[in-house]
Image (cartoon, rainbow, N blue to C red; front, side):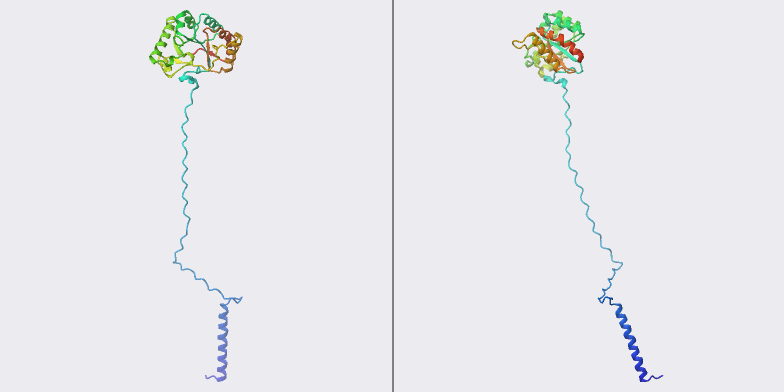
Length: 284
């Protein structure tokens, strides 16, 4: 059918109007409502793209252990029992206190001391000078009969014996032991004391070879030292005070019976006082 020109013009106008409306609507979809341009959509990475490697912190190296100082091995404690010169004994090794009397036997004082010790049932140790033992063998026998211990105190109380050659030291100690054993053949002489306490390693070694233990002391009241003008009472008080002050369990106490009457008098008071506080023993 053929359209008139008027109808063709109307149809063309309608078509143009439709196209215009459609194009405007399409344009409005790409423009944001606030009038600004819309950002283009971000394209996603293709699935085959490998993820970026994750950077991890390198592990910190462990600190090296600080070198520790090696604790030195503890030094063995010095045994106070051997605290005398050249390792001589100052203690009995037990809680018992040992009374020791040097330089005898003395014909005047030793019998008094033996009687005093017997009255109190106390045993002591007598350090005998060989020449005195040879002169008074009967007193050596009384000492042994009383259950007391014997100790070699050299032949003639030489203060320098420790500096002599070993052969001379041995001869001196053997001579002293021979005099003691002549008086009391069954006696045991297990101890040695150097005059003045002048022990030397050589002296201790020779005594040890002869099976004698070297004894020093822990308590020394210096009963042999008399000050000028000192009365007997003052001297006795000095001896008593010194022993009482310094005596401890296990102590070896030094005193003298040779020509020391004040010492014997002092022990008349000291022995009862000591017995209340300590066990008095002879060295075994």
